[in-house]
Length: 268
Image 1 (cartoon, one colour):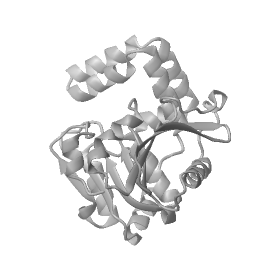
Image 2 (tube, one colour; image 1 turned 135 degrees about the horizontal axis):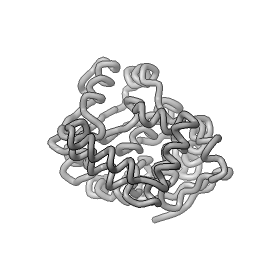
Image 3 (cartoon, helix red, strand yellow; image 1 turned 45 degrees about the vertical axis):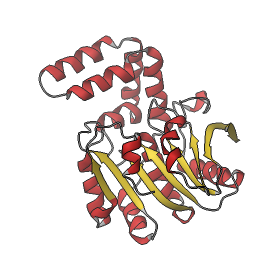
């Protein structure tokens, strides 16, 4: 089942997997789609369902374009949207599933409304470290101007990435990642919009670690041993902050963790 939920001026598209009342809210990675969570379908119990959402700048989800440069999504606005979604789906408590950028959305959701969150499973979650390039490109006026220039003139970026790769300063997988996500003007705009939409959606890790320590619900992060995009060491550092390594699992994969084999190894 597919649908679009409207909250004030925002629209968020979703796909429902399963028919149970025990509900997971799921958020995909950058450039991906809500149907990615179909891989969980075989593991669903009869009383469970997944509501998988399209991130803003993806699919049919809508964020007012005039707000993008100066009024990105606020944390209170996001909390209001999630609260409204819970009422719409008639649930008082939800579990969370997130992959990559969607993992950051889950971390922020857990921090904002821990009393409404049960189990959490994150695959290669973003948000455990603020990348300095991201901070510069989304958080400064000159950074935004440079990136908007790159949108129309990407050759300089590709030449720089190639040079860094040849010097051994940019891993082959990250070099490919740049080309895959920035090879068309449409994709470059998508990166621009997604970066700005979620600029405020970075959790405060000490506060989040305290929340996780105090909760009795399951919290698990899964990282790819060979992931060069979101490295396992970020998960190790956050696990140390929580005070327990039991929250982290490392599997013999790279960044692409949305596979049946990985899901079967997870606790959720």
